[in-house]
Image 1: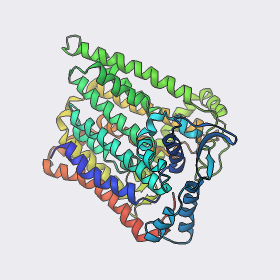
Image 2: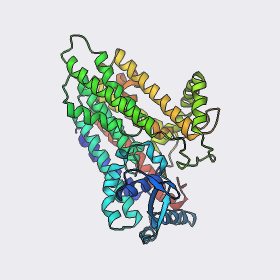
Image 3: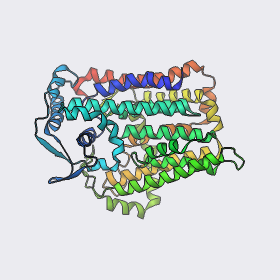
Image 4: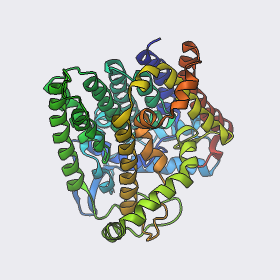
Length: 461
């Protein structure tokens, strides 16, 4: 069994299950993303100016369908029943429109929404019900994610099983199965890491491959473009006599250029007001990103300490989010189970990629691990600037489970203790493969069983 084959054997059925069975518009901020996708399917690449503000104009029936979901939930009608599905399908566009503030979606370039928008073009043109448009967008997003992840695993020179395991992290798969730019971003990270393994193996990548690979991540959701620093790092740490030093220099030049593009794009698209993004689960936010930015820059040591403290104290919540809190779906599992699934995954990939892990050492591994930590700090900083109004850094970790999951592959490569690899060496290969397969199946299966068992009593997320 190859890693890329296992990725499809496990990822396709689980992804389809989540894309089609998960209640409509209940993934993370999915309706706002959906409105942007519908707008793009209508031919509008960016949100436009309208009498009500900057945003998107979509059929009013789509907004009414989201109200139907909430009504069914309050009335105790499970959203997966034929009655509920038929009610959603009755909300067909009839010429009426509604304005949706989609400014928050402009944090990502249109590239992140292209897969879902491509899937939605035909049903939008046919005035199909919103549920059909949503399913088409979800399926297109999932197909793009799995295709890119498959290519990343297949073309990698090392760490193939680690890449496959990261692609199958249940939360990553759930994001890929929803209408969101997150799926493409995670796939772009996987493709970038895969290309880096080829550069590290002194394989000479063409200009076209390097530009396409790095541009994909540079134009995905910020700040993950910082992962592109792997390419300059590879050149700096190369031995002077390395036969692949020229190839590494080419990759470093392209990677550095893409870093600049990613930074410039992120700065150009940053907003002073993301108020339409969300109201947190705790309270209404008084958005003031300019004030928060000044606070952050005025006390950087205090902020860095707050991020470390937040990561340590809230990490247990992130682990639960990766394996049993998949948007709307929440598995009724003991809290210890996700921890066991993390350990099982690390042991399995350490066994299967054991030789690769042994070769990744010294300055390369140390700088990679430090880079992951710095990227997490950058994500906390973005969350502080745009998603909290507190001076004490409270709430900066609210969605860190989702924001940190794209870094799973790098964290596993750089942070996995050597002891794990030593223990994993005693595990038979077939059992390691079975573990990589079983972990997402158990996690997603438990969420599905819990949801079907509780019906509409599951909290609407």
